[in-house]
Image (tube, rainbow, N blue to C red):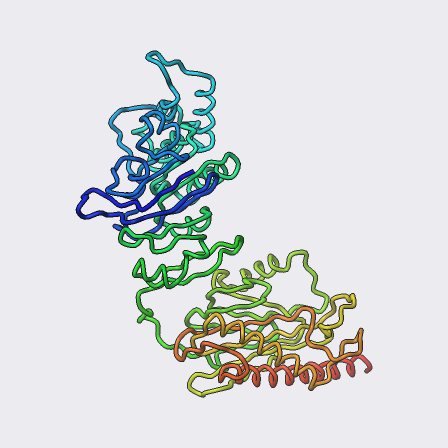
Length: 495
């Protein structure tokens, strides 16, 4: 639909803003143009729309050079939403959107058709502005006005839509509505979209391909996964960023990092004495938030937390929604929800094993509670019910962990737990084989993200060796404490 070849130009022919830009956009797809301020994004869009002449190179729409179109014929092919809209004349929203039908009018006394009316009504409805149809455009907020101009462009029903930062002035709900609508038009009706974005993450979510400009030249072009690279983005924008993936769709997202490590945060060290243990729960209250990854009941996944809770529940605990019940319990007990991660166990929390490993000045603290009445051999696929018993493992690292180290640390901890089960001869009661854990185990690794940096957490590393030894020893001791308590309980029952 759109083909750009060697495009060079700008406001000053002797000093072009855009230099040798080439790309193609297929019908029914969205291309997002990215780049820092002054990189030539808006200038490029103006050249695509014919508002600025090219010093060299060509722009073809529908297989024809844009210079070969008459003004009206070009407007039937290309709809443009510029960055700034002039308010020279006072119009209602309906009249503003209706202007988008101008390219479809013909003759000296052109008549308004049913197709025109349907196009305008549909565009207003899609942009959620039908209720403002009789409102003067100058009395609307910036966001409402922006939606009216997008509706005008949609009413034009051109096969190519050029947008210059269309989400300006819009809150997140209306950003979503606008881009969902444009994306739907591309997917269902074959609309071709080229849009300038300031927001890298929005561009990644909605676009099929991205064009990254750096000082008027193409720095990268391709899918979002190919263009949104930490090194590329950092080099072009001159900013520290971290790349991650969207939680629901396979699209990359960028997180902006401070220019330097925050100096206001002191080097914090978590020690065994920072844990409080009672018959109700084990609680670690950290002075600073720790970066954590866990399979906890509440706040599972990754995040930054200050409060870590391992709650005791009765063996007969049942809940249709354990997460909601845990949330309510945390609130009743005064734990701030946004700063807390919590798991539960039927094991006695006062039997928790908490020990320090590694260097004394920055130890790794391991905390384990264990109940093995629900011991399971993970390699045995037989059906089984859920019984009382859980092994909950915490590993608190006084250091800086990479994502790789966090994941490797979890692997190391799981291997060490399985070895402890073997050493203590914990059997799966259904299969009679050595158990590897229980079906309701939870694991948490948290790090202060200060001090020494640990790029890896495998068993050959200092970190991995401390995790392996710590989890093995603490799990084995927790299993022995569970068995000792069970013997006492069974003895009391016999009496």
